[in-house]
Image (cartoon, rainbow, N blue to C red; front, side):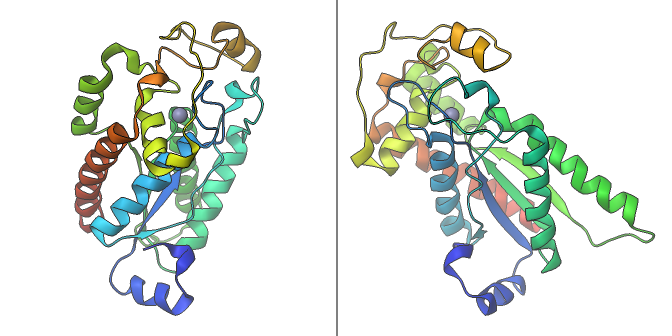
Length: 247
Ligand SMILES: [Zn+2]
């Protein structure tokens, strides 16, 4: 169930059955010569909608912009600075908390968001601790990366081994191909497996990773593999969500 396709009385009715919501969060950033700019948001959104159906859960609007400063050397990338993303997440959670939501399950598609989302949770908890003379109602946030479960990790290893890499990975590209088959791209990747390493800012990133990929051979992606990854992620995350939302 998608929040944006409900009416307010329907949201009110949902709140009588559950106080939990799934919030997909991604990024809008380059993903190499064949990966879509929206890859991280598309992966998080597609999987979140599947989890919403499997677990009868409400799915909020996708936070499609993330902390992606290191990708700004490539056209099309958009970044929120960490402090902006923290403020955005805090406002989203506090808006929903006002209506009675208590559990916020952020389904993440971008590794670069992890530190900032964790900091946002600390800001949210700190605001409550500092403001409350008495204990406020329970409020719990969780960050779950779509690729994190043992089942998905195993499948990625089987499909791609070391060519998975860490940015513009064939697994994330495959999920976008499954979700948007009309937007599949092709280009020659040279070298097929991109270099590995670390980076600081956008200029440093572009020097170290000239075509945008890190350690990945994005060309191994197929829509069929994307379907398998999607199904494995939905099953694992739906089980995790159910347990977390009830606990
Ligand atoms: Zn990505």
